[in-house]
Image (cartoon, rainbow, N blue to C red):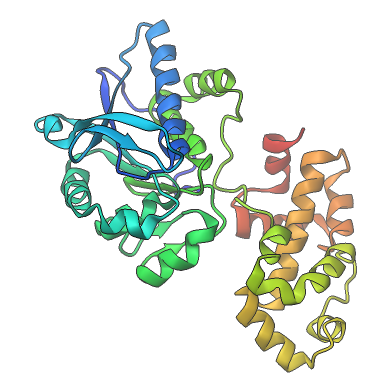
Length: 336
């Protein structure tokens, strides 16, 4: 999701340096996904006789860096970048982000200084914690892997954590959700630089969508609701998904299904799920509508009624509020 959804390709008159930062136990796909996008973009640019990206992978001490998956990455030292005009900084995440962050104080300090000179800085997955530790996300909206949203908010309360977005742009800082979302982020960065044609060529070569915009949620609400601390309402959530077309999904009805008093249900549900019952119903309906828009040829009005919105306008408002895209545009982007 971006505050400037219509990208204006910038002048690309000289090679641009993209630096991928590495540290021990990083997530391999967090790093290699965006690297592959910029590599493919460089090929596409070279075919057109245009300046491409110069790509470096760097770490504090250089040499071989072991990823969490066990493979190693060869890196240059950060010191070797002294005097280099860096266009874009990209930092991946790690499965054990707290440990990785604690062991990377030098990298954080370098990132804090380098980001002031680079044109833009981006994180993949829990790489957002590095940006946060460097003070680059203070007062900003940001995305990260949905499993780490609470941890990010807990440790950096000034950040407006967007739990649904695939990626978020705030001025010159970009953050993305988990793992493969780094590919979506990198494609968006390439599109911002080079335009849709180049980005589309890259997407075709990598056999991925041009991008899942920030408007496509990074996880299934039903799947998310089945995590251990929310298991108390598993049966209720299944019942809700089977009855989304009903206009009687009130707190009283849900409380009765959960065998609780309305007041206690509303309190416990918000405590367990982080959402009010009304917001949960809205999100369940939204997800059901998304699936129908992706997988069926039903018209918008039919989907709106079947999913409990009542009419197309109410569904449109819900899509805009949660996904920053209309149902028709969503179908155009994601229909199979």
